[in-house]
Picture 1: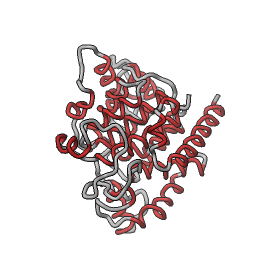
Picture 2 (picture 1 turned 90 degrees about the vertical axis):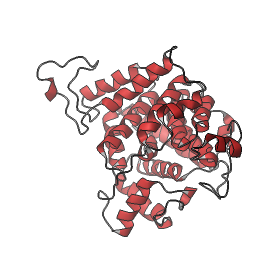
Picture 3 (picture 1 turned 90 degrees about the horizontal axis):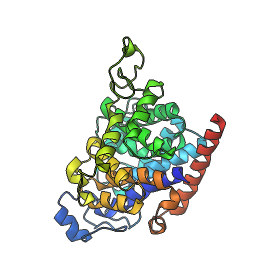
Length: 358
């Protein structure tokens, strides 16, 4: 099963599906402009976000994901200097520091802040991160989780290092890493069930994920001296528990969100990662084997539906594999041949890495 390719293409499809209906916080307005149920790629209206792009185009976040994929494939692994040189030469010359501008039709806060420090203040990389609380970094690093799914320690180090280029809040970094750790487990073949959090906590205890914990892997009280066992860069592994609790709720017959797109109202429509990630976990559990339903319910919830669909698309794409993504979503994605080539190369790199560890 092509889980690596499924994850990265699933993310790009989710990104492109939201391009024409992005950031509608008034759902009646979205239904008026986009129809009662969005089921395919839309061309953005000229006076809205991403105006001027076409149906099936990806946003700047999608372009950054592709840029990182290109870097990973070129270097046969994560080489930060190669990625930052691409930002310096390919992206930043096209920006002016304002939101409604740049490739993809919009530039997110974290990228604008990094651009301002890097270009405006001429600071070195490592001093360009800002305080944005969005999930943009978690989305950008999906290819890293895909490549290093079988090597959690390496995955964690590369994900955190890359996100720290643009975001510096430790809580946002920990939630972003937690999302990618969940994604890595799905790519490795684990199901999206409550057990996934216990698996991740065990990785913390094994020193593979940089979280501090004093409890045992099942959250039982620590034994004497256990507080010295698992120190980490992040103060608490609670971000790793979110997936398990949300999965438990999604599988509980007494807890239903109907229709499922209203997950955006339950967890919140705004851009912050703490609104976005739980909604993606819910949809990825409820529609674990149904890519189309998962991404379309993510889209039709409005608000920051681009991040919701991108995060959801990666999680479900990892579970169903590339072959489980409906063909119409691939054929309608502009640039899909290039994306598929990169995804297959990334898949082969991941397989070669797994073989070298066996």
